[in-house]
Length: 97
Figure 1 (cartoon, rainbow, N blue to C red):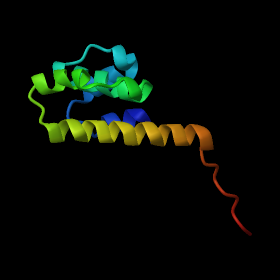
Figure 2 (tube, rainbow, N blue to C red):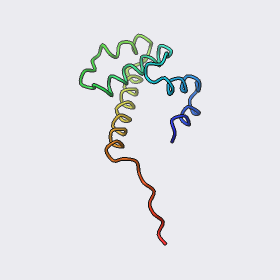
Figure 3 (cartoon, rainbow, N blue to C red):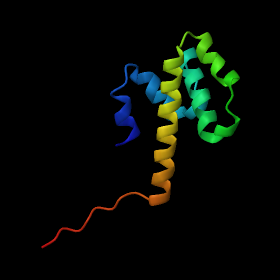
């Protein structure tokens, strides 16, 4: 699935496209910025993540369960991406005749 197709399913397609075009440094609304920041840190340096890194999410009104969801999804996709980098992209199998 191409990343631009994912943007079609999001509630704010222009925001998703800007994020895809500009990367993690894109100008984002406060909640999205906080999610991207904590997700980037968890992905790049998980051992350094502290409670202080979660405070911006709490300050924006996210519950502990919502923050846990963000962390779980981030960790899952970071792991899946690392696995795909190791395995490579699947090649179509030759048709049997």
